[in-house]
Every structure is written in structure tokens, then in C-alpha cells.
Length: 397
Image 1 (cartoon, rainbow, N blue to C red):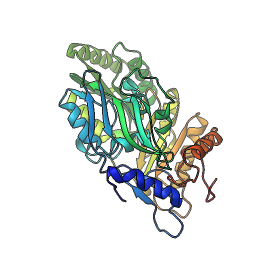
Image 2: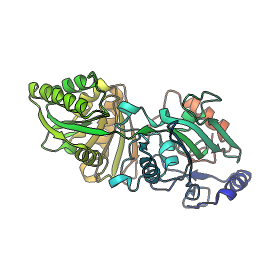
Image 3: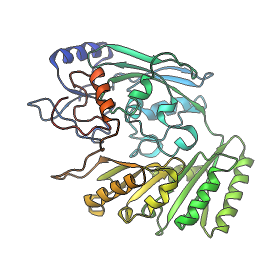
Image 4: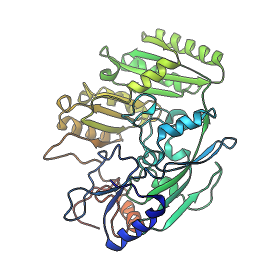
């Protein structure tokens, strides 16, 4: 991986375009193994990776407007630390595999390029919904930008959402503007365990309550322990009395459903959130089903012994396991079950195999995705072999 100086970056990209040299945009390189494998240039063992370590500044924080502009290589942990000093934060989950306090969380640009969202999406929506401005370099070195620096900006094409979740296949993200939120004054939560049927009733009640959950996550038995699934509920408010009242109501409802309940303070909630993004992960899967179908997914035998955290209000989440605990045929069964429920499964990471599973399956919009790719990257230089929603062969289209 090379990390060019900002003054050299555009000229390098132009040179590689003239040479038709393939390369892979990256942030810090902490999650390069995720997603479909990237093909190197002919005669090379590994792809050329271009990191953004030199583009790591906080450009502007408009605290009164609740926006922040950063270069794409700024570490997410550093940004959250700087925002916290002003009483604000990005309401975005740490990526899976991040350590305590966001250690090893990668860069802001990498987070946007992957476009993955966790349980905080329940209240704050996903990364793509918090992105309000973007600057980028196309494969030919042309600089472009979209959006702006205010939340209600609607000028220009919506390149932001197009780039969010593109996995580096369309352009190199260089700068981002995102919305911020005030840090929650008070937090509290519950960890509730019991039968899936009873937990589903509680889930519906929590989502319909007066105080919207900050987080409501399904946990599989392997993650929750004690051989039972669980719901992790987190509440945040400016009023501690509101949290106390809501928790009391949820505890009463859980008791009526014969569910085991553990009340959590703010530190305990944070500790459990951290537990829900770490583990032994030869396999790392992204799951998505309709929220009402999550119970059927969690009850499937293929998930036995697999840690899984699923946002209960949106049906998206991650599952992980060691290779010995999860044979590849069970992953395929799980993928087929997700499809039968109207959802999908992506294999972000898998153990070495002579017949690896596809990272993602072909999208119904694959022809449109390929057409967009040709417009942005006609020489197919960026992230060769890694185009979300398209099953790529060795040919260049």
C-alpha cells in the first residue's frame, strides 16, 4: 500500500489512467480482506492499494450547524474524540472488529465506501443518510464534488449515495461532510432473554413506545449466552426520568411475557455494544431480511453456534464464527434461507477454500450497476473484481 502526499495524488491517478493500471482505493487498509477479492494487474501478485493516511485532517466543524467536514483518511476514532470535546458525535456504529473506544475502527472514508450500518440505524438512519457532501477523484484524475456543507443542501446529482457502499469501485473519496448530533445526556438499557416468540412481542412493543430506542438489537443464542436469544435495548434522552419511566414499562411487559431482564446503566450498555462487534471471525457475514422475518432467520438451524447481531427495527446485521464452527455448506443454506425470506446474505470474509463462496450474488439491477461502472471507470481500473451487486468473471466488460 502506498500513501501519496495530497499534492501528488491527482497527478498519480492521471498517470495510472494513461497506463490503464488497476488499483484499489483504501483508507487505512484495516479491512482490505472484506468483500470480493480484488484482481491485481497482469504479472503482479497483489493489487496496488492507495491509502489515504496523508489526507487525515479535520477541515471544518460547524458546531452550530451540526456538520463536520473531514478528509477521507481521518481516523474515525480521532474524529469522534474531537467532536466529543464539543459535545457532539457522529451517530454511526463502530465497524465490526473495532476495539474499546473505537480502536482499529479505520477511517471515515473507508466507513462511507463500505456503507455498512448497525443498530444505531434504528434511530439515526444509516451512513448514507448522514452524508451531506462529498469530494472525489475519478479514475482519470478528474476532481468532482456533490452536495454541500449544510443539511438541507439539494444541489447537484446525488453522487453521495452512489459512492456510499461502492467499495472503491467507482472513485476515490477524498473529503466528506457529515451531520453531527449532540451527545446523549443520559443512557440506559435492558438485556432481555427468553423465547423468540415472546421476544418478538416485546420487540414490537419497544418500537411502538413513546421514546424511540437508540438501539434495539437481536442477539443470537451464541452471542447472548445461556442458550437463549436476546434483545439488547438502549435508550437515550435529555431526561433521565423519561428513560427510567420507559425502562420500567418495558420491564413490566417483559415480566408479563416470562422473559429474563437485566437492567443496564450507560457503561454496561456500551460494554455490551462492544461485545456485539467482536469475536473470532474466519467467517464474517452481512445479513438482511425484513424486520418481521428476523425470528425465522434466528431460528434457522444453520445459525446454531454462530454469533449474530441484527438491528431489530431494520433487519440488517452481522454474523461471525470460526471456520471449525461453521462449514461453508451451512453458510450456503443460510444464504438460501435469507433469499427465501426476501432478504440477502453477503460473505465479507471467509476461510481459505478451493471453492470459495461468492461475496454477493447478482442484483436484479446488475446491468444498471455495470453501466454506472463503465461511466465512472471505463478502463476498469478501480477495485477490479469487486463491484457490489455484480458477479464478476475474469473478463473486463
